[in-house]
Image 1: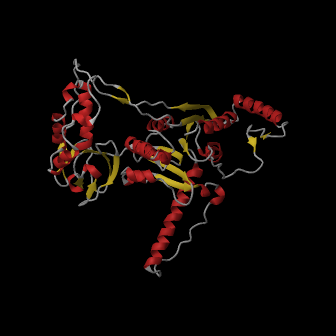
Image 2 (image 1 turned 135 degrees about the vertical axis):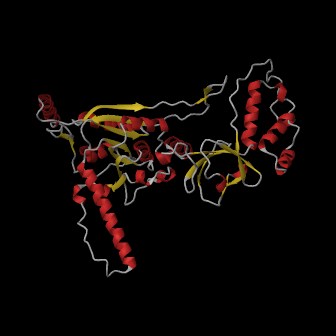
Image 3 (image 1 turned 180 degrees about the vertical axis):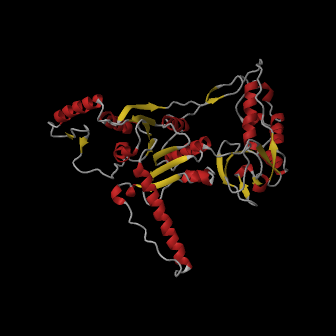
Length: 438
């Protein structure tokens, strides 16, 4: 691993602009990045530089490293804002004058200093108001940006602020709790159902760092793990992921053995098509064998389908004493799954939790919660998969008690219960089916 992360050609980078907005940029040599009113810069000037620096656009498409403003303690004075009127009459410079300063190529810091010098009421402000005024003008006129290395925090924060429905409103603190409850670590074998555009899988791959294996179950012929392309994962990390469609989860869907053919008499395009078909068959067979072998170290679910219908399909493949973690933006969905787990003899100690997060502005003398915050980051249901050992007397007594409860429940015509497992008996077979949430 690199001691100092370096910005490389061909990678994706998050660009934090002065307005607070974030832009995703794919760095292509000899190209120009357009940041709107904050100017443009040459990609070649950024390639090879370390992450952590901020840059200011100067001149035409040129950048230079700028220093971060230090945090200073503001001294209280007798000044107050009582005599200040909130209008534009205090500023001697008109909008036309400011535009002329920008056309002359004056740097953003010099423009801010000019605005301060021509502000009639600036000295009447409190020290806090002065600092706030300067910071506001710097965001508007200073063309400073910061390249940020993509990681799980920056990726989740980017999508949660831009398009939270794309990741099913999964907040970073909830995602971190999900990985912690799942005991995700290197050399693990993880089974995951991810409908958050691959955000959960990105968390698994970042934490496992290429050591272990992940099997992702998805809808349709191809997965939609779109967020993975932002993370710049190396090849050995991407290779740990195998994917399998729900259509091939059942053991009845095992493909026919691949028919080997002699490629010496084939044309080039036929050989390419043959090799492509062979690789697709190998990928499918490998993913199915990995699932049916079982012994997964954890099951993580963040899906649009009802979690209990997913558990019916995938729970048998999870090893004993291993965690099961289910995420949903709605608590009511998890309540139904919680009741399913309580009735099951395969799940121990199910719990529903909600993460609580509040962001703070941290400045000397001005530390306080931010004005805007998210209401909820979703809910988590976690439990432990247990092994029902028939030889244990305690388990035998549990099954005996479960059979009594099942026989009593079967007197009700509305619902039938299996006397061995105490699970409700469906009117129709539910094998390889998931219930989609409304």
